[in-house]
Image 1 (cartoon, helix red, strand yellow):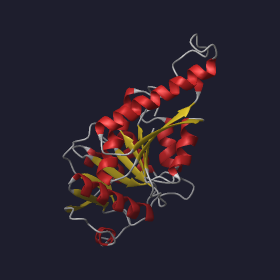
Image 2: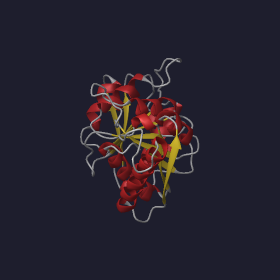
Image 3: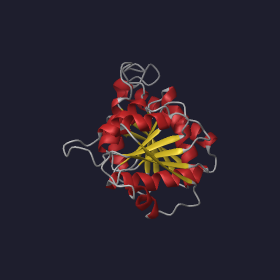
Amino acid sequence: MDGSASALGAVAVAAAEARLLAYPLEVVHAFVWTELRVPQGSAATGSGAPGLRHEAERVVAEAVEVARRAAPDVAVTGRVVPGAPAPVLLRASVDSALVVVADRGLGGFTGLLVGSVAVALVTHGRCPVLVVRGRPEPHGPVVVGVDGSDAATAATELALAFAAAHGSTLRAVMIASSGADAGVLDRALRHHDPRGVTVVRVVVEGDARQALIAESRGASLVVVGSRGRGGFAGLLLGSVSQAVLHHADCPVAVVPRLAGQQRLVTS
């Protein structure tokens, strides 16, 4: 986390999800002095580095307090790690169940819909990444895109877990023209314990990107695989995932085929 208002909002979301999913939460701040809003030198310390380190630790302490207020029963720890945010969080994703980030932080350019750190994580992360954005409907459904790909199957599993934890309906959306047969929805859902979740199967015509963006209106979350059946081999993040990430009206979780299982991390 970088101390921005959006990052603190993501911390609160991460704490709430950690409570519902029964995970511990680790708050990670990547310590790069040029991105901290303090002078290089510090009158109090007499040198730049101690003052900057103190500021980084203050940022983490504030975020940990936000998390503990949001979910008092969750085990929350904080960590300051030297390095740029994207590489630090990519390393954390290797043994995490979920990484939670804001769509944009302190370093974001106003013309960008989603910041570079979030894009790097959903493209290269080794676990699901939840990007906090938009205005979710708290009691809205969880929406998942289904096309028969391995990533979409993993996305269905995560979507079921979120829906069960929140007591939400799951809307499983398949595009009729995607090349997947009509049984894909049933097979994807049959492979996972529905956990008592009410599942609505939706088959729509047209463009998958526009369909999922439309479904995001009034949803609490949209879950997509990092790449689907239509992806080109050279692309790490599919066009559907990219479009939903940048234009959805609610938070978006992007799921790779491989995922960690040990902890929940927020930045």
